[in-house]
Image (cartoon, rainbow over all chains, first blue to last red):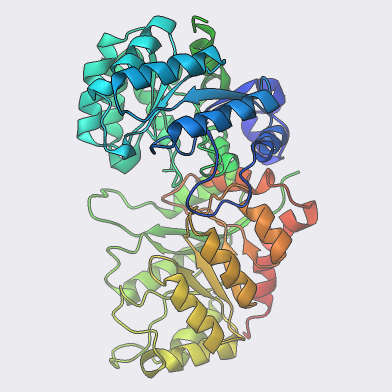
Length: 262
Length: 250
């Protein structure tokens, strides 16, 4: 039987792996992306063999987040079972955050995506309902991170308060801070590492697997922000056993999504 | 079936502050085998701490002489301070050693792209049709455009761009037929390869990885799962770079 690396080297479909992309985006963005329609993402998913992509709006860090959630809902309805949704919120106040999250979860969204490029760290009081709901409903919360100490501090404080939420640290390894990401996963049992990065540091997946185990690493592509196809190569080409690649590409995500209280 | 792969964007042996162990040739060769990359055009990288040009050239040429899978991309510098072999000698050596491209690093090596400083260098490169590898952090795209206009018979290979550059890259490639693009780290534009192949054709797109900084297999899957024709995949994988090499006047 061919290894996953050998299959990828032939460009074979990986559809039998039940791959879940836990870090997708849809919508328009300020720099030029040739195609931004959801159907374009689904076409790439089909080419590679990715079963599902959990997407948030490209406007996740802007005051237009709620409108972006509407675009995600449209994509979920246009591609049922293929595109799942993260709710994004603008932290104007806690009540507005709660209202938007409850509304979107009622529409079938799967989790929450927060982005601190808006100038608000995750321990901002306006985000409290987001983590409380995530805990109650056992939701994944995808957190944009970029190796900043204030973000690690916020995550260390928040994680014990919402032990049933799955906190996914996006861009794990960014800014050369691998050790801090590893420490976060070791300190907090409800933290997972999502190493999606445009400049894909050589050997990063293998180092994370060695440090925290394959059960605590998940795969996200960041498509359409950038391309899905190189991101999957980072896992398939990693110097780790195929059973670990399967956990990262599918098993861990299935476990996280499977425990959600609907 | 995996197409033949010839990597234009890789290096070894260089260092950067805080990096304890430079990435070595054996490590590169091992990753090439792992990823199914047959040949690699190499330079000394990272270049941050590359202070002695003669020593680096010696290291580069020695590694390529020892390993047929490696093709040198030596740095060239205008002999403006009369401290180096003259431009013709530098480029003659590069061509005799089978170079795939010449690397230019104007800021790092303290020279100017203006003709009064480097005109002789580019005239000699153009005479030989030896491609010039321009990493974006060393040669901004605007400078590539000026060079490409000034030297229409000289191929310029743009490398180490990023996923936010499509609005610059597409018109640059459309306007200048002598500009080529390495798809290596971190050109990771969603459907970018497909758009470039449709608009300018696949003939000026080159496979690149970004080794040692980047995970090389990312570039392999980016090419293999791109929505382009198999013939175009072959061209990008190795054919286009091979064609450029054949055109070098040796």
